[in-house]
Image (cartoon, rainbow, N blue to C red; front, side, top):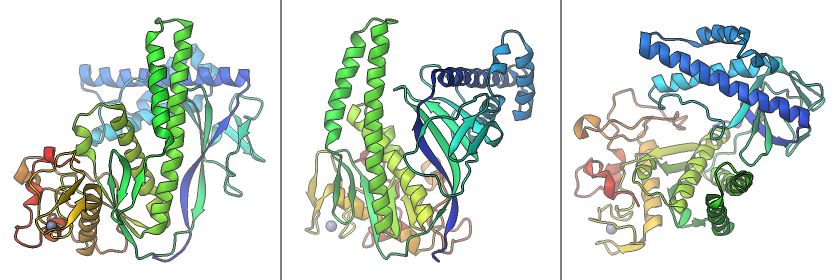
Length: 439
Ligand SMILES: [Zn+2]
């Protein structure tokens, strides 16, 4: 891949400290955004379920004009109209992914549970000499620039938000230029775990950061404290902020850690193979540790996806039904059972495996098999044979430069042909039940 710079859209998120007047206006803006979103959602829902009518974005936009003229909703005029329009666009987006069957039906925004945010497009802010002034405000926001914007860039969109811990954020969407990394010959398989954050096919185990245990204890303590407070009391409100602050701290430290890890993995390897873990999340397990681990994995995957795209790396996502823990990475034999407490096991061929490293090696082998046979699709199960729906492809696979087979070409069994090269017919591994595969 040639090393030419490429232009990408990149958001720069910084904290800012509003004046009391600015905070008041923004809080009212958040309220209006939520109100407009909920009104439009209600209108679209009743129109469909009562009259089988579809209301599109333009129709909701006309409704907004009407709402502003009513006495009850006159307060919508006090804030900038742009975030309100954007809320309708966001609702349209929510319906689009719903109609594409990529998400559930849009839900109402809640004052306490939804993120308080407002999106301003270019007509609703002024950005001059590094100072950002929003519509209906006289003074620029006091932003703490944690990193400089790309030179000469003016943001196209600005999103202001307030998190549950009471912190204010501004996210500026800019054009940025990225230079892809020089091509490397390395490939790595990444397995997600509970005891270790990830295990690599190289045998390296990336542990969870040491502060995480302490953070978790603090969180549990704060949650117990919150549970003891009387509903509606001032002390309860204080305790809730305390819980939110600890959540925020955990999320911040974790994100920082994952950024460093994902950058390192993308820097060191040309091909990265990960497993689609959707099925693992379907296996119900409601522990705090599991929830945090799952959230962390999703976040890491997102980072790997966009960073691989930026720097010209190939990210391969292998099938969610692939028995990575039970297959011997040396001979390809399939172990009968692999309970979760088995950390080390010996295959019939004599090789002793660390459970996680073995899984990571199998993931790598499966991923390389896909790229080697030139498949432009991830390995999939045959839905007609199993009665289960085929795996949905969530993002364009980063296998640029590799010729893709024409549609309908059968590449589904490729990884299993490699993993089970000897005696077993290709495809047998694919028919295993999912329940026993999760590790
Ligand atoms: Zn073996």
